Image (cartoon, rainbow, N blue to C red; front, side):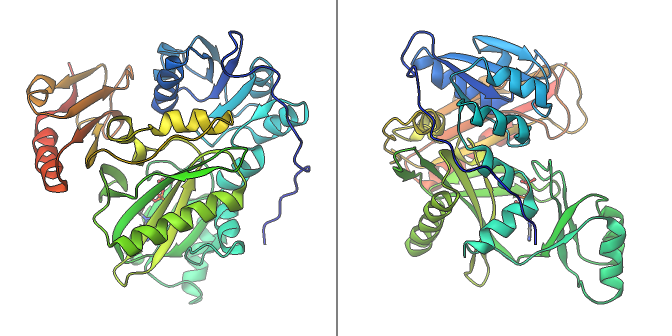
Length: 399
Ligand code: ADP
């Protein structure tokens, strides 16, 4: 049993609102999610501050002011938080102690430090889901690789299973699928959870938003297609090709999940639909998510605008999609490292209904997320056909 003790929630009042000329939105993390969040905030001329280690990060190029520092360091986060009116995140692996202190000192923070503390640790997150009767698979906690091996040897743990690092995992890093003895070399030697290998039919995602007035909205269910060799999202299709009853059910579960966390902002709820038709929550992320990038082009409200609305207690936007969409991640080609070059863009732009986003990372490497393409079309088939052409035409190489 894992326990974590928090101070009671504090009532926080906003002295200036979002549309005051001096209002400052602070973002912990300077990656592409931060960049796209700021680009949306720019529509409302909101002043944005960003904290991250490196001033060449994507969000540093578009924010009002960049602060060099470590979002895992207490002092850096605390001092940064003191400079802003509203603090949010684009990555959950941040210093929670500093956020708890800032919260006590009346700094407005969304999502709440309490929910971030639970979500950033896969062990606490799983325990929270199970305790709240949200559907997810059973799990066990291990502190070392040796403990896992002895559990296998004593018959307490059986193949196949999935090991996940409790902290700091992202984009499939920190996930090991162990099918037999020969996979032991993949075992991670870190605090981890172990869960049964699910027989996956589809991986689904629902992005929900909640504001302090407890208004909740859900975007359409999207379908994530993974690169098997890297556990990394290749494409996202929305709406997902699933039965309407399943779509209704996963939306309900996602809404229930954000209500249970009592958090404000976006929550991406990732699901496994099993071959037997069962639905399990895989994990949740309390921020804009890769599975919601298509909303920038095919939806009344983008996920980034919805996040800003939700954290600043504005009415949430309509989530209806105008048409089907596919989002393709532009990943660094294997074999290339260094200054990126986006090859084949000219050719891709001949296709109707595509929008290309280049994140502005200063160097590429194999499988690094360097950008994405949103593809709109009249039907799911139409976007699938176009996505094949785009995938073949755009490559991220280095020159
Ligand atoms: P990350 O936080 O790095 O995205 P996930 O927990 O989402 O890690 O796992 C990455 C991918 O690994 C999943 O999207 C899925 O394809 C695969 N995976 C994770 N857990 C399981 C499981 N229990 N059974 C089968 N595949 C899994």
